[in-house]
Amino acid sequence: MNAVRARQLLRLSTPRRNFTQTTRRSLDIEPPAPQPQEPKRPSKVGAFYKTFSAPLLKCFLGALFTYQLAYFAWMKLETIETAHDKNTEINELREELAGAINNKRREAEGVVDKIGDKVGEAKDKVVGGAGVAGTAKKGGWWPW
Image (cartoon, rainbow, N blue to C red; front, top):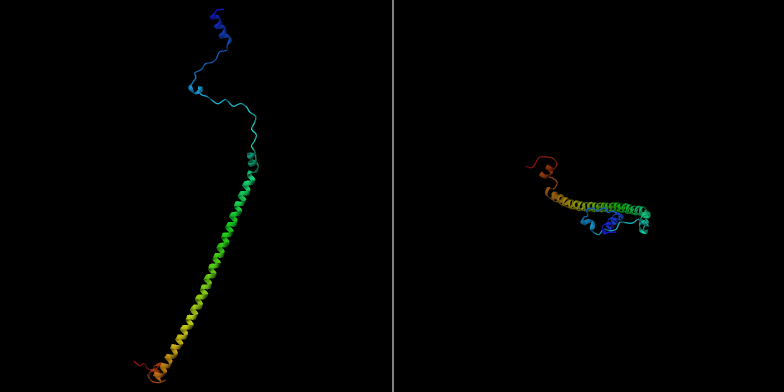
């Protein structure tokens, strides 16, 4: 066989390839195509959270709600106690003030009584029970 005939036979016996335009990008190293694998087994952590996430969330929210409720009640009681203490202190101070005012009144009355007694004695000495001052006191003529 001659060489030309051998080439023709070789061309016919080998399948033809479709040569398309290649780009630089296709010549880069690309990761191999994923091969079908058996399905992944779920992790233990994922299974735990899938099973217990809702109950854990409910417990957390319940605890948070309970804490907030207890905190509100405590603050309310503390406010009531503070208001009661202030009202008690105000009432005690009012009583103390009333007592001090009464003491000052009694002292002033005592002073007024003493002054009144002294004025009465002086009047008796000056007037002597009669005369112009006695007439003016009784509603008689006026001394001016």
